[in-house]
Image (cartoon, helix red, strand yellow):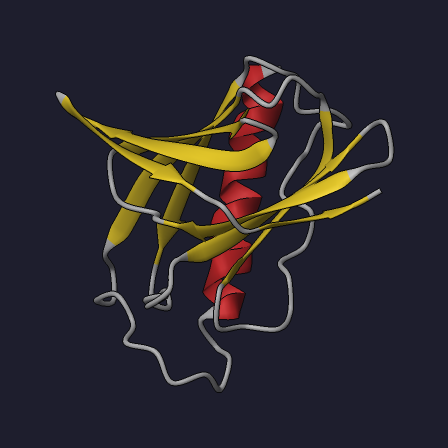
Amino acid sequence: MKKKLWLGAMLFGMVLGLTACSDAEQEPVKAGESVSVDFANQTGEDVGILRIRPSEEDEWSENLLQEEVWKQNYEMPVSLSGELPKAEDGWQVEMKFLDGTEEIWQGVVIKDNTTAVFSYENGLPAVEIKEGDSDEAQSLDAGSATE
């Protein structure tokens, strides 16, 4: 299963490389620079589709999951490389759950050597960015749910 999650992370990197080719005015990360981040699913739900995009973009990436399900309490490593867009307003992360609902996390910071822990606080989507010894919590009031 870890091998398939790793393959999903590689697909994620390729999709972000394609996103960098868009016409949006964004500062790219230096060529050859790589970013490694882990996504942790603490939503209480199993995820069937995971997609991302810079907040300024209109189109979503392809489904980043290689497995049919990204289970609750699992982490997924993600490696990005090449000329990636610098999302001034962060990234949006969309999860479609197996029960048919979906949620969008807004303004997610994707930084090298961090873990983005996706959860809910008081019924609202929240993401906590953990890096090294310090934690930077992002509580998001605005989320978009379709049921």
